[in-house]
Length: 400
Image: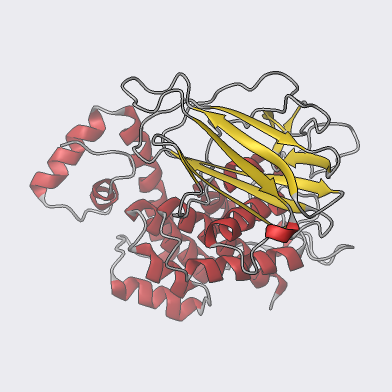
């Protein structure tokens, strides 16, 4: 029996819901796979914690149990989690219900674990070991940025810079585990904004088609800085093949004052474009300070030279102009909104203030996105759920 760590059969095995034949097959697979064993231990720990919390010796995710939890907790967001849990992996559903149960029975967090009514708004507490939020005075890399990703774009360089293809995706389950185990959000330095942006996978009609590569691009308003403009790049490998394109990003210095990758913290790049490998999707947000918002602000070009073996499109080139506010759609696409909300949440969680108002807005927008049919990716929906759970934690603590 071939199973993976996110296989629903593994969760069913931990919960004792398999028959003897199926259980034996999963048990054999677990004993011969270190990753499966680690996942089994994690699920077993969560099952034991939830069972102890609910005061019962067994755990089931049946409709009756879920209904009891929701009735007791009166959690406004729980309908989102429950209605959505069938569309996500079994493991993610298990974590979500466990989080709801912990809120219901234990109150989720002691008052001493939060800093409340501090100047500048209510603040959600974070775990020990945080190195502070953005703008730390000691010159250290602000939380939320990755030193491995280039941040600033050299506007004056005609050679341009490469887009850091091959960027990783965040695993939002670390937020769920922290809330469940300690009632606190993880430390600020654990939130990498670019990794959260890259979770915002939504289907799109390609504006760039190159056989082995498809792309979508969109400009929109920046919710955390009204003086800036956001530009999104969404690339994907439609055939699921690993590709390693070369990219080049150039901005017009007459129209753009500054540009930076949201979540990137590395030094400026002025060297020739490099390559990155990926086989699914890559999403990037660039924050632009523009002098002249109308017309073409720059360009993005990509080449598939050195593409996958057997590719019939090797050596193909693509080009996309970057436009300013005159090309912004009246209503942003689901893909753009999702990337901005997920990136905005990581940016908020990595900030020093973690102000209440921003989290409430992000939670509202996340709930709206979960209601859209366009947002079907399981990891993306799960990440949006984490925003709802974080806001619920703050709201319960403040007594609202």
